[in-house]
Length: 327
Image 1 (cartoon, one colour):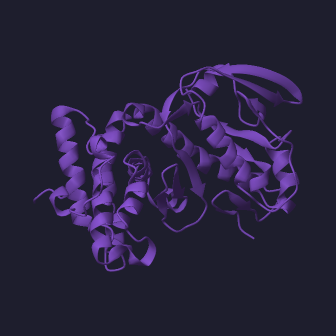
Image 2 (cartoon, one colour; image 1 turned 180 degrees about the vertical axis):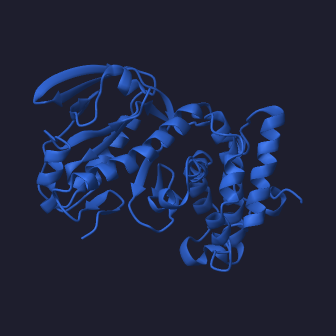
């Protein structure tokens, strides 16, 4: 078997291969760091907030049963839920939280003991939802186990956009947002160098900020194979172009290079994906590049804004063509 993840379910080639585990941790933390940076820098644009603490969590439940003893040993689990990593400069790092600490209690959330069963993300999702419901700026008292000894710290979080970031280990280039989660495949990190992957992350976060999933459902748009046909195409293209536009501003607010979005769109792989095999629900490559270049110029002249944020409670119309700048 090969180390791979489908959502938060993880399988491994060799239970004693620490390099494999550390590779997964490194990949997970790259997404966690980008998500934390985007979510905290753009909190002012989000009407749904959570405490930004900077901890990347993992649970024993999400691993295959046969793998759990090796995972527990490598990551020093002393309970069901532990710290996979801590974002540099985050409130958690300042409070003294470290990778491989076990979490016993997080605010008023008490972690239940580990139970046997098939791989599941239920505990991880329940924990995230519990934390997301806490006041975004209030101190959080956290009880940890480190080296078998209890430790209590207080994290002073910062407001962050309410979104959970999930890495899927697969060579396929997949990215999605469902309103409360952004999911990016590790294939993006295999193909796009440096910070280019963050453009895809920002695009998916923009979907959540603009409530596109809810608004597409409210418009009666059909997902899946039918998304690129009939009236569905207009709704999906409108949502995609709005997310492309807002994403450039999210990147600027988070301090990423001014031309990052246009460089991503001009990457050979990004260009190739906008060909005959692309779903008609997504705009063509040239249209998306025009959006990126136009917004980068607008930001250079006037600073970052908040396009379409004031309209997130309005119905989608399907009128996407005016969103593409003229050549």
